[in-house]
Length: 252
Image (cartoon, rainbow, N blue to C red; front, side):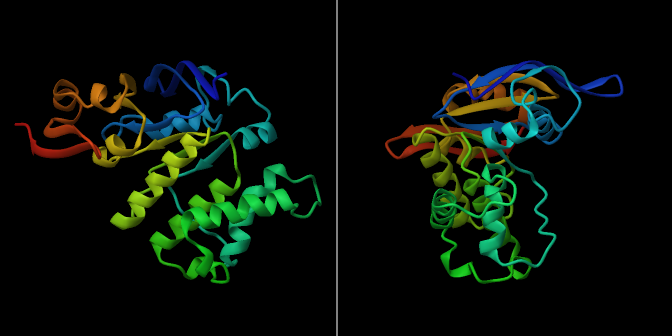
């Protein structure tokens, strides 16, 4: 059974479609990189799939009641705003709200999910720190942990590794890949095509709101797609350690 199914999803600004008749499904065990140039429609697509934007077509998530949707999919938006000066432990625990009956306290299962998220993101030394006083990269890791604590079958993340240092970028992508191997599914919008190729099982390429390619990294990051969509030449090779991708030059 698919965790998400989109059929002819379309989002318009006025009469102009910014997401145009996009269809695909997401199954458990997939780590999907949603790629494309700026303005391709990646953020809009994810927000519409979650029912956060008016749209045409079908999204199985958008059809769910809000509470059921929050138990089915976690959402990490690109804007990383922490509004209140709470400690890190409290902020991560907020990820459990969709699972708590009104007025209930955290159960042992809730605490286990929180502990697992803290361990995955290496945040144990930060739990007593005030979240708003952390660096931008540290705050990003805390917000990823909050989404992980939600412990949903599907996680949608908009530019989750933007602003992280290289080690944190790699470790975060490894966390997503591990989650997929454990039976979850991830959709992460990304601009780093090298990390997408190396850690994602599948890439979905958008351009001007349309789905251009969908498949394994080597089948999507072809010279023709890179030329037409990104206007670049790049080096791509499968190695025993995984795919290696490096942009080389901008085409005239």
